[in-house]
Length: 305
Ligand SMILES: [Zn+2]
Image (cartoon, rainbow, N blue to C red):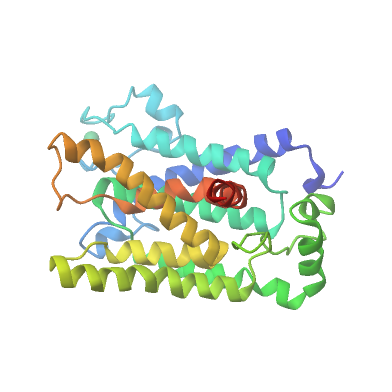
């Protein structure tokens, strides 16, 4: 039996530890990338240390989930609290890897795309949540990657036409020959794979539309409505999932932001100028839109009739 033919539960068990370790690295990214000093942003060679007492974290205190539980959420040296975010990010990354094979066929390009997108959203959610910051160093490579993911279908167009004809089911057929498979996506006109055109339009429109919105907003309110990081996030999400999905994500995130902000505004706990981490809402909106976008769109059109 080949590796990629293992049953999903076995693949989940094998992938979960990778997810946990990458989640642990995700915590390093979340903590260090928003820092001011370039030297502090080193995520590769600088060993982990406690942000409070600067003590170096011993390897046996750096085991995902288990160490946090064993230390009861406190630094082994100074006893300061380790935020619950640390085990949470590790757990979510573990679940992302374990769950990925139940959603996308293991070893395919769409599986890789799903994992990368999910992991990036996890990191960006927390940098935006804790520091109102969406680091360029993550977002620029993702823009390029989103477009690059459409290249295999230019090289092997027969796979593209197969997915167009069969939809998502084609992906679960011959997994490994589909190893370089294109990503299925959708546009409001139909359920099609993300082509290079949709990816590029998604990239440009994802960056351009909020930029235009901001320019108009600035004329009226004399201040920025959206942060630059939000444009870049929409741009790479558009490159990954196509312009249709990008518009859906923008709409869904705006809806979430309103639902979240309204009670705060009504109770006077926030004002018109209060910053909202829009990146968090973009991350949350991506999942329902990527998986249920066509169904949601069809439901919306049905309601309009
Ligand atoms: Zn400490």
